[in-house]
Structure formats: C-alpha cells, structure tokens
Image (cartoon, rainbow, N blue to C red; front, side):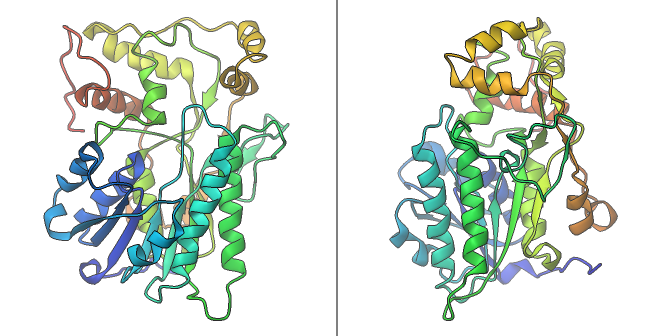
Length: 367
C-alpha cells in the first residue's frame, strides 16, 4: 500500500464550503492548526452569530479568509475557488423536518461546486461530505454488515433527507466520470459519516444538537428502542483532512463511523449519570414500540423511528483505517461516542442552547 502523502501546508489554500456549519467550523479549525491557508464560504458576512466563531479561531487573523457563496447561486463559486488546491465540500442542507425541496438543493449545490472546480485549474481534489444514510437505509436484512459498496434502497416513501444524500453523491460520482475535454480534471473522495455528535464551536443549533438537546429539555419523555451509528465531529473533520492529501483515497467512498453503534438507552444512561446530579431531567423509561408504530401513521419522524426499532446497525469501518493508514501511521482512532455525547451536551449548555440549572457544575474537560 502506498504511504500517505505529506504536503507542506504553508503555501496551500483550502476552500471549506459551509464553513460556519457544525462540521465546517471544525474542519477550518483543524486546517488552521495544521498550517494551511483557509478560505471559508458563508452565506452572509453580516451574520455575526455564524461569522465571529470562525474569526475567533486560533490563527484565523493570519490565514483565514471568509467569502460569500450560496449553493443555489452557481455564479458565486468560480471566484470562491480561485487559487485553491483542495476543497472540503461540507455544506449541505440538514433540516429537522426535511421536505422534497431538499433533494434539488443538495444536488444543485453539489454540482455547482464541482462545475466551478472544473473551470479552476488549481483545484486538485474535492473531499465531499456524504452520509451513512446514503448507505444503510431501506435494506430488508437486519443482520447485514454495511460497507462502502452499499447504497440506500430508494423508494417513493424514503425520507427526503436520505434521498437527497443519495442523489447528491451519485451526481458527484457521475460528474467526475464524465469530464469534458477542456475541464480541469480533479480527484474526488466522499466521506460518509454516521450521525455526527461532539462539541459545538458556535452558538448555532443544528439538527444534531437538536436531537441531543431533546434528552435534557423534557421534549423526549421516553426512550425509543433504536440504535444509531455515531461518530465524533472532530474525527469526521480529521478524516476529511487526511483524505485531502492522501492519493490512496482518490475515487473512494469512506465510511466514518464508530463501532459498535449506540442504543438510545445507552445515550440516556450516560447523560443521566452526568447531568441528573446537576439538575437536568433525563428520560430513562423505554417507549412502547406499539405506540411508536401507531404514531408512525401520522408522523414522518415517528415513521422513521419505527423503521429502526430493534435494529442493530453494523458497519464495517475498516476501510478508514486501511486506506488512510489511520491506526498504523496516523495514530487515528474513533472517539467513544458515549463520551462525545456528554461533551456535546456540555457545549450546548456553554453556548446557551440549553439553560444552566442551579446545580450545574460544568465539565472538567476542555471542549
């Protein structure tokens, strides 16, 4: 196997799309700390809630440039990509309640970035943020062990967010397989993370934060019997950056997921052990399966939960170690998601997304 390539970062400019997003800001942080010149795209420079956390990162004043670019405005991307060597395309819609419009937005946004890169000769590679929901959904075999060769089985009833991730990734692979003669022919790697958890670096509450918040703010009275593959946001950012300069990953899909997957009762237990003594009410009782199945007739969210009841998602994540040489050379192993959930909850409190209770003592760990 070829040893991972090492590039001198000091003269390399990396574009991070969706730089103010939950994953994007972690990518920017790690790139800056590694010595890269970073250009981040945001939808508006006047939104201080999203922009200031980026500008306050270490080394941001020296090596971070923020520019405006919108996934739905193709004309904004060629200029944004100018003089960039690598692109981490993390920007993608992830609403709490997705509808059909998310599919077109995800596909068009991905193709707008790739089309612009085909016109910018300095771009060597794009690392695209995909998702495990483009791999693990819709399969009938509950004992299946998923890997990068698998694709979600899409039907008209498939959740729109899941369909958007399948459609956007397939559009990206189709694009690089059909370059025009005069195109700048760049490499593509897709990182497919499972459900991303871990500490926030801003006050912006995304969908992942919303799901963990529900355990601590009384909006989830009981715990469904579902299992979710999880991964720490810091590990996902690291996978993007390691894949960026490693030619072993060219043309590859790579799953980023800690294993084994985590049952919601485990999440409830670790959060309860940590936060109940500090005044937070964390659900401990199991949600009756029959009630969830009945609710699925009227609620899309309950329907999605009912489809996952009692299913232990098993994922073969060995490729991330083999192709990135993670364990052998790069000293990279996935964090324990149970610890990541606790760290995420503390960051929600510290960023004001959850209130501080009178018994709150704070974390002993630097987030």
